[in-house]
Amino acid sequence: MTEKEKILFDLLKQKVAETFLKENTALSPHISQWKGDDIVRFQEDLRHKVKGRVSEKWFYNYFRNDIQKLPRIDMLNLLSQYAGYQNWADFMQQHSGFKQTGQSLKKWLPFGMLLLALIGLGFVWHTYSNKEVQFCLTDENNRPVNEVKVTWLLPNETEKQIPLKGNCLQLKAGLSQIQLRLESPYYKDIIITRNITENPYRENIVLKNDFIALLLQHYSDSDTQNWQKRRERLAALIAPDALIYQQWFGKQKGIELYEKEDFIAQMCVPNGLIRHIKILEIAYKNGQIVKLRFALKKDL
Image (cartoon, rainbow, N blue to C red):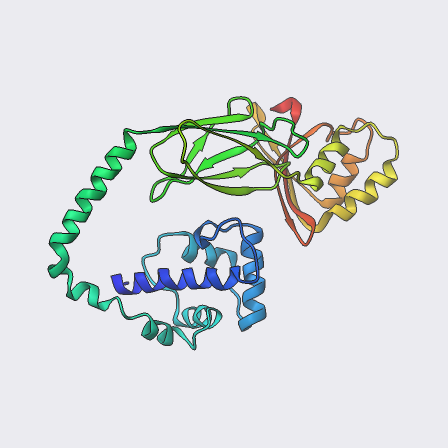
């Protein structure tokens, strides 16, 4: 794959994301950060608009990884049509203006070197002028939230995990803008972007409750004796082909898979095996649980 082809394919990915986001939402405007429900909705939109399909494996291979070769021409044509072009050839023709860049490189090289030097000086200045930043997390009832995975999305660098101290995270930032991804089994996943204009910078972030996850957690902790009502409610919450598995830690490290009916049965038996579960991961499709990973609190 030539440099020209790589640039054009990256641009096509951007156009595909822009087309999708005109009528849909995603956790991130960058297609390389889509996952789970974002990918499922994109697959459905692609099938609806151009009668085409890409598998989840294909999506990860070509949209989330650094590829070494272009996809097949039929896939390039399909994506180009989705983005509003006749085919891949039409897309390339309409975005061929960057050719002049290489031809005039020598002319602008001195100015480019000066610009790089100025950027380098700016980077050094930002690095040594770090701002103290603190975000504290609460739920919609203003209660502290500490069961959150926080990822700092650094530009052109590897993502960085930020630990919480209580329900707050603290970091030093030499950048004028910070982007964080917040993930929790009991609250809606979000990506926040903030312009850091003050030093120190302080902000409280309110997480929206994931009511299905909280309800499932309530069922695991509840002592209600209305088992039939609980069974019916759980059956409505969980998709028929849901992937459900228990995570084991310590000496018995491993996983145990459950069929939907077996899981519901265990949840509806007084003092059964699955009591006081801790939800580790949960995913939805069409309002139902399609993936659930949990552990017993006593095993954590």
